Each structure stands twice: as C-alpha cells, then as structure tokens.
Figure: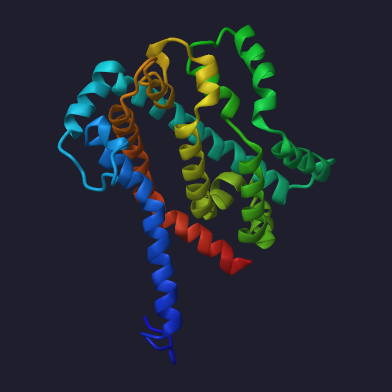
Length: 280
C-alpha cells in the first residue's frame, strides 16, 4: 500500500531500492560463487577471467564428497546437536529471562550484571577448563560434550529478559497471581505464548551458531562417526593437493539445510524484529 503523498518513482525511493538490490547481490554472491566452483573442475578457481557460470561437474564433485566423508552421518549428528541445543536454550533462557524481568528476589540486579559480564569473556579462554571437565566426565567423542555446555547462554538470557520487560505487562502477571497461578504456571501459560517472535529469532540465531561451530567440536570429537558437518568438511583438505571444487561443493551442500530453516522461520524473525522496533 502506497503512503499518502509519496511519489512512486521519486529519486530518493529509486536510490534506496538500488542500494538494497546492490547490497543483496553482494551478500548472495559468495554463496553463488561457491556453487559455481563446486560445479566446475578445480582449475576454475585460478582461471582468468574468473568463472561466473555453473559447470557440469556438480554431481561428480558431490560424489567425491560422499566418497571421502560420511556426509549424511555428519549431517545427522549436526541436526541432533543443533536441535537439542536450540530447544534447551529457548526453554532455559526464556525461563531465566522471565525471572529477571518479572520476579523479585535478593541479588537479582547483581546476578544479572554477572550474567552480562560473562558475555565479555572470549570463548577461547574457557577452552582448556571446559576440555578438562568434559574429559573427567568421560564425554570425549560423544555428542553430549557439545550439547550440555551449550544448553543455556548469556546472550539468550539477556535477549529474553529485555523482550519480556517490554512485551509482557505487569498487570497481566498480577491478574494471573490473583487467579492463583504459580510462577512456573505464569511462565508457561501467560508469558510463553507472547514470546513466539522472540523465540523464533533466538532459535534461528542459536541454530545457525551451533550448525557453523567448528572449534569446540574439533577439540572434543576425534572419532569420524561422531563428527559434525563442519569438522567432517575439514577432513576434505588434502595434505599435498587441494580439490577446491570438492570442498566448495560439500560446503554448499552443508549450507542448504540452513537456508531451508531460515526460509521457514523468516516470517517470525522479521515479525519479532519489527515488533521490538515499534515498542521501543
């Protein structure tokens, strides 16, 4: 619907749409070029002028990927890890966010500041202590080593706390308490249904981070049968020669599930972002 008084072909509008199209093409080009190289012979990487059209070697390179690594097993492992972590993050972070936003208890502000402070610590600093703990528990070479340490995170708690503070009115919480609801029932029946846009956004961010995580899975997963997709793709690198077409073909195939998930939840993510912008 066109705004009243706005010109459909004004210079400002044309400039904005031109800039949006340009930046969209810049964002999509790496994915397209990855597909182009993955569907050509590996010599296409170094040829001049660069290859910009898809070739006919896509299924040949895909066959090499499936021959060199257990691609489907790695994809299944990544799906299990990303799904379980995302579900647990949504539950625990929304529960903690509800407590920090709507409940009164001693030390709440100090504890919330401590949670925020943990976001300033680089993840690499906790690598050795985390490895020692996981090793003592006997979780090396198991997917448990990936799932349990990532079941809740500070960013998720902060995100949900901020959303609940603005989206859930105190009058609604007070009305629930007058009806005899416990704190958990308030969270489950009153607060959680309101959080769908925020949950979709946090879930998508968490799923993408877990899917693309490389360092921690590389440290704790040694056996090929438990490799996640990023670690499995790393084993495609040769010692003396590099088949770039095969590597980029596998990387492109590993990206497709993420694109499908983003398309499924993009509507909820945009709704969550725009709702937050309107409220602020």
